[in-house]
Image (cartoon, rainbow, N blue to C red; front, side, top):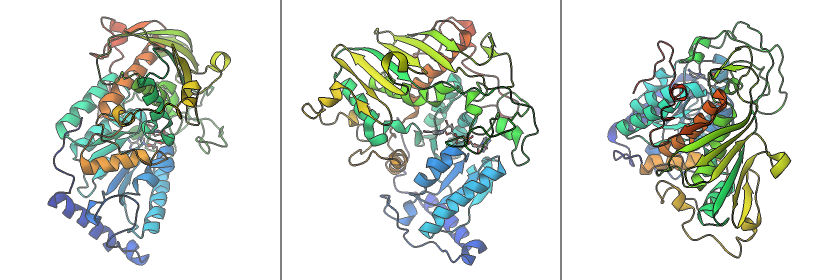
Length: 493
Ligand SMILES: NC(=O)c1ccc[n+]([C@@H]2O[C@H](COP(=O)([O-])OP(=O)(O)OC[C@H]3O[C@@H](n4cnc5c(N)ncnc54)[C@H](O)[C@@H]3O)[C@@H](O)[C@H]2O)c1
């Protein structure tokens, strides 16, 4: 739980620092030229009561997620003070998107642009940092932002390793800031996943026996030739803590539509998530969403749950692995097909699979099965007999609120569509309550995803102990709990 300094109304220093941002920004020539000054009270839909309570927002990492969510949702609550990205083309596009929104709000059009995110953190007028950078940078950026006195919204997966999660929790405890992890299935999608979790906890499938979590497989690339990195990308900075690799990129753009459109397969933008060096493939990309809902529903994120046995039944990697490491560095390397059985100490089985079309008839989502029936939930639907029975047998009052760390947060009434997760974060900045996706419960779940990846990489059954985040006496598996970090990019609290 986040415990707070009394920041529900800003301290004089914070008020004056906001004022200086607004003053500095509105004084700049571009704003004057475009005729925009800040209105005394900009019209937007948030509940903030006075202009001084609008948080000034800074963004780090401006790829897909920035454009599909962060920029639009965060700027409903306050102006953008600055943006950081180590790719100057991405930075320019991000600036344009934020400027468009500022123009609609009649806010000043000037914002600070940074290659090195630490410049953004030095800005005392910025209250909130939203992080949408690549996975291997999350932990360092989060810790630096917390230590700079910012409240933080950071994308899933929060960490690259189990050790990083411990470091973030330590920094959070030291600083008492508010932090939300970007697992929006806990609040959005018309609360379909919230309903699923509440139903499971209310015994709607009877005694739970088996969960099947389908998340798709990681992509395959074929060989990617070595080429010079784009001139506008600081490849050294992008790699950060990870081992130095030559930049590699395909000669053509494969995806003409969808989230990767416009970018060739490479070791960087969009496609980094398919390299274990930078991420954890589908387990940390979509596992961070669906394993989260599965373990949340089972109430296995906040109490002692005993050891978990992790058995990789089928695993296909696109390259050969030796001692848990890929033997080639010229193509994507995360598991493309997998079926892993996790058995909890109470006997419940959770299968994590790329696909269950052939036997269970679905490709993406979570199926909950018990002695009295089963149901399926994904981003588009929630179906099954226990769902059909709801009109005659509604869930008890308070069933949704009881799922969260602080039952009074969030206020779910009337929400559930896109943007609620950011709204919940912004409300918690005011109330200093714990947001819906708190760090501790996210880490508990993500450590299981990391542990599944270790089992798949080593190709053998492991026992993971959430009570101390280790694989017991298994030294080979324990070696994956943390990674060596490149000089200059070490993570310390
Ligand atoms: N919650 C969701 O549903 C959801 C959806 C998509 C992505 N995400 C998450 O958002 C994050 C970003 O994903 P994406 O798909 O937008 O990736 P992306 O590759 O499109 O964008 C990442 C950006 O971070 C920048 N970056 C890398 N290192 C940096 C550094 N040192 N300083 C500043 N900027 C740096 C890159 O240059 C790039 O512009 C990932 O962690 C991903 O898992 C979450």
